[in-house]
Amino acid sequence: MEKMGGAVRRMPVAARIGVGGGLWALGCLMASGCSGTSPGAGVGAEPPGGPMQNAPLQPPPGLVPAVPPGPATLREFSMNTPGGLHGAPEGLNFVIPDAALAQASAGPLSDASVGFTLTATAPSDAVVCTQPKAMAPSIGVSARLKVKAVQPGPQPFTGMSVELRARDDAGNLVSAAEGRYTVVKNIREAGDFTTVQATVPLPAGATRGEVCFRFPGATGVVEVDSLAIDGLRAEPTPMSGTSAVPTLPPPTKRFDLDEPGGGSGAPAGADFFIAKGTAGVTTHVGEIDGTHAAGFSLDVSQPGDALVCSHAFDVVGGATVWPQGGLRVRSVTADTRAFTGLSAEVRAYDQENVLVSPAEGAFVPLQVWKFPTPGPSGTPELGRFGKEITVPTGAVTAKICLRFAEATGGVDVDWLGVTQSSNAGASTPAQGGPRHPGPSASP
Image (cartoon, rainbow, N blue to C red; front, side):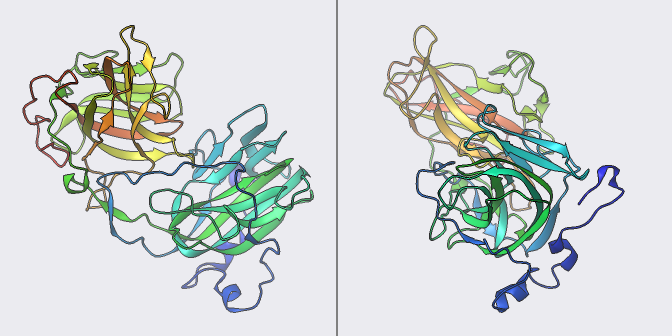
C-alpha cells in the first residue's frame, strides 16, 4: 500500500517475490496449485453482446513489427503519480461513458492509502484499465483492493470483476475460449482489503492486453491501492517508410504547411480549431524538432475539443479520392475503445457547408493510431499515411482532419495532400507532394 506522503509503502506480493529469472508465479505453473492464487481465476463466461464490444482495428499502414518484444519484466503501477487518462493514475485509464451511472476518482482511500475508487450506481460499461501493453504468453497479476459494496445479479459473471482483456498486434480483442475476457477474480460479496493474485495465460494469438476492474451486471464500490503485473514486455520496434504504405498516387493538391497564415495560428494551408475552455493544448508551427521538415505540432495533455484540418478542397459525391500526408506520432494515450487515439479523418460538406456523414459514422475514417510510430532506430520518425475513400453522396467540399479522440498525446505533421480523380474537381498536379525530403515524402 502507499500511504499519503510516502511515509509507509508496502509493495504488492508480486513485487516482493520478484522476477527471479522468470514469472513471479512460475512455481504455481509447475505445481498443482498456489496458496496465493485466486480461486476465482479462470475464463469468464460472459455471454456475447455484453458490455464493451469493440470494433476491429486495422493495423496502421507503414508499421510492420521488425523486432520481437523484449524480455518480460515486472511493473508496479504508482497510485501516487498522475498522468493516466481522464484523471487516472499514471499507466491507467478511467473509461466512464455515462457519469450518471458510474464514477472513478484517484486519491486517498478509506484506510488512508492512495489509489483509485470505482463506483457503479447502475450497471454500465464503466471500467478502469491499465493502458494496453505488450505481454508475455503468461502474466502474473497482483492487486490489493477492497470491495466496499457490491450488488451482483443472478448470473455468475456479475459482481466486481478483475479481468484480462487480451488483444493482438493490431489492437483487436482476442477472446478467451469460454468468454470475451479472462477473469482474474470475481467478487460477489463486500469485504475488507485483500490481495488478489493469479497467473493468467493469454489466449492464442494475443500479444498484448490490459488488466481491468469493473462491475459487470452489478453495482458497487471498489478501492484499489496497488497493482503489479509481471510479464509486461517492451513494445516491438516497428519499421516506418513508404514501402509498407498502400500504393497511393501522387497528390494533385498539396496544402501549404511550411508558412504561417492559417486560422488560429495554423500554417497557411490549415486551421486550428480549439474549443473555448479546452485546456492542455499546445501548438507549434515551423521546423519539426529533430528533422529537416517544416509543418506543425499538436500536443494534447487533457482530452478535449482540439482539431486541425486542412483547407477545403472540391469533391464530387460518389467519386474516389486519396487523402494522404506525413506525420510522426510521438506519444498517444488512449483507452480500449476502437475510435480513441489519434484519428485521421475526412469531413465532407454540402453546398450549405453542412456536414455530410457517410454510412459508417459522422466522418470518413482514414486511420486511428493507438501507439507511437517509431522507426528502425526505436525513436519516432516521420512516416506516410493515406487511404482510398469514396466521397459521401451530396458532398461538394471536404477537409482532412486530425484530432486526439478522447485521448492525449503529441503529433508532428509535415505535409497533407489529396489525389482527386478526374471527376472529383482535380486541380493541376502538385509538384512532388512535400517540398522537403525525408521518410514521409510522397512519390
